[in-house]
Length: 192
Image (cartoon, rainbow, N blue to C red; front, top):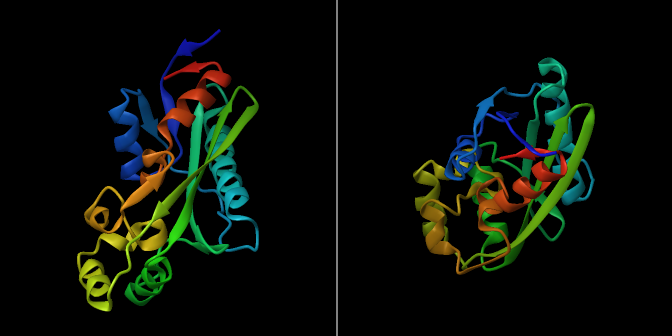
């Protein structure tokens, strides 16, 4: 039986919150204290789903397991190299140079923890980026937009002008694959 209820989002990401609001989801935020894996030598898609599971389990434990908890983690990868959030402007420039003129992959792991069960999924989207000049990279970094984004860019922001093609879930690249979240919630018996 699927029931409508308030979801707990185990993420402080304003983009994930905005996406859930977009589909009319009732939710509240409880930020996870789980230790995330980063650049561990693990496959990027496995790392994304593992981090999502850790976040969901951490918050579910604190919430007593009686409410559905959604954890998510987004990873950008090019040639098997995982690009997390940039540490500083030089790191953002390094990432953007790596992505320049190439296709890359965005993986978002999602995990529902509910009533002692874990439901997991990883969504993959392919993104193509134009070749960027050093001047374009510097101007983009100067906006501040890349600094808290995996891969150092926001497809829904100013970087949209550099992205000629996205194959797969657009909301996945923003940070939460909405269709996959809905399907996984249904599997867990939750109506969003």
